[in-house]
Image (tube, rainbow, N blue to C red; front, top):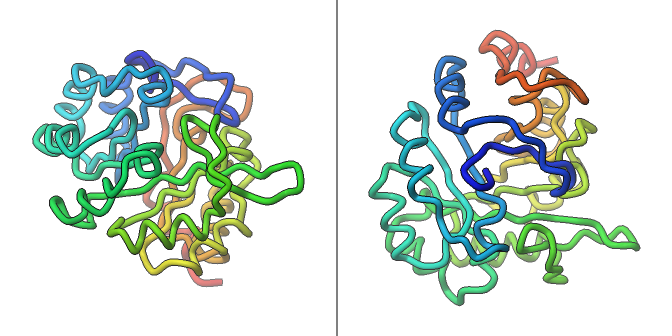
Length: 244
């Protein structure tokens, strides 16, 4: 989300307008989406804070559990979001910048309600590190190291986002997923790169991801094609997880 609109990026750049998030949620309800992850990509970098007005409209229409991230800086923000009906809150930049926020949030709200998002990008030598502020700041910390640290602080899930694969339809970074999944015992959600049902299967079966989040696959007809809100059918989902 950006400026109250639903957008989809490519490698965290070139955001394409998708539509009104409320209308999209109504369609996702019909498609029986399992969970919605809504990330306001400019709330922190542009110091906007949380767009409560838009978010309240989204939550009021959303039939599925919703995880929200973007502009959350303190426990007060989190209390208001949970009171609105948000079930999970994703902490990204704030997890690194606000001391003990993850630990305090987990203590007050429970680990199951606290997600840490790790935006990961490879450097010139191919070493992946966690980035904050929409990918602009390099923490110099490896994703496995960061995931272990936040698990120790009480995070209940890790949303692992590959900046290099974001919006590319090229498949998940399976090596990255495997490394982080092996480093922690909490669920790791793969995102960034999904282009097919086989990509989803590979992330879950080969790399140990507990769940997969899709972006472009859920809002476009196909790569370089127009907007079409969609979601894999239950039949297709079941088919990709049948044992070979």
